[in-house]
Length: 119
Length: 108
Image 1 (cartoon, each protein chain N blue to C red):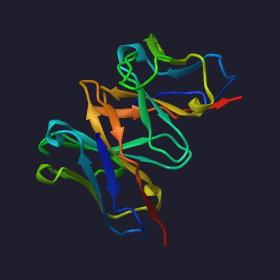
Image 2 (cartoon, chains in turn red, purple):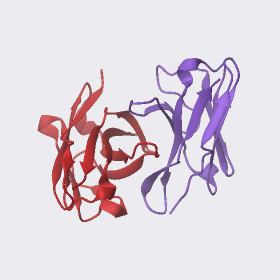
Image 3 (tube, rainbow over the protein chains, first blue to last red):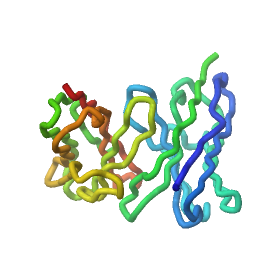
C-alpha cells in the first residue's frame, strides 16, 4: 500500500523555524517527484514546493520563496520541508503528496501535519 | 496568475446527479484533475487528465473539459459522496500547479 506520513507540525512563534518530514512507503520513492501542499481550514489547497526525483530541481510558491527549503533523502525514503522566518499566514495543514504523470497531478496525499504560527 | 473558479456549494438529493464546474481561461487547453476531501481527511484524487479515473474510484465519477469550463459529474449520488471537491491544473505560464477554491457538496 502506498503511504505518506508527515510529522513535525507544532505551534511555533512568528520568526521561528520548523522542519517537516514525510516518510514514504509502498512505492519506489526515487521514481517520483514530490510536493508539499498546504491548506488553511475552510480554504482550498495551496501548492508550496516541489522537488524532482533526485533533488536536482526544486520550485517554490512565491509566498514561501527564500524562506522554505524542500529536500529529500532517497536512501531514507523521506521528504523534508525546512521552514524559516515563519509568519502567521503560514498557519495551515501541510500535506506531502506524490507527483504524477506528465500533467502533474497529486496522488496520494499524506494525512497532513498542522503548523500553527502564533505568539 | 491563472485562476480557477468554482461555485462554493452544491446540493443534490440522493440518487440524483451532481455536476461541478471549474472555470478558467481556456481551461480546455489544460489537463484538469479533481480531488475529493471529506471532513478531517486529506484530499483524494477522483479524476485525472480531464476524464480518467484512478483505480478504486467508482464509475459514477466522470469528467469532461472544453473551452472555459471543466466538469466533474457524480451520477447516482450517495450520502458518502458528501465532501469538498477541488479542481487543479498545471499553469504553463507560471510553471506551477493551481487549485480552485472548491465546491462543498451537500447530499440532501
